Image (cartoon, rainbow, N blue to C red; front, side, top):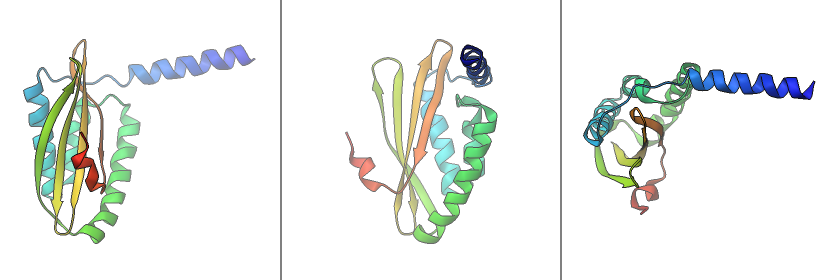
Length: 145
């Protein structure tokens, strides 16, 4: 019984990986441009549009992504009342760690606070994919090495 449960969980995990295929970006210039497009939409208050821009490049299944969009929209409502409306954005840097991992650091400008946005890219054998991203109100992140 325990062995069949492990086999079933393995198949579910493999199926989830298979559904997580992503489009790729060919170069660092393309992933920097993608983050700039995302941040421009964020600065317009168009979070859903911003997340739709990155959807083809993320490596998570669609159902997880859709849940992430819903959760982000809910959290953004809380941030909006606390920090005010978005008023702009700026990307500070993009750094590589080795040949296959990169991070783009940006921040969203609001009426009362700066919100860091971090984008992590991985160069897969097929091209660059968005491995993960995060936004929060932890301003010291912008000063981390």
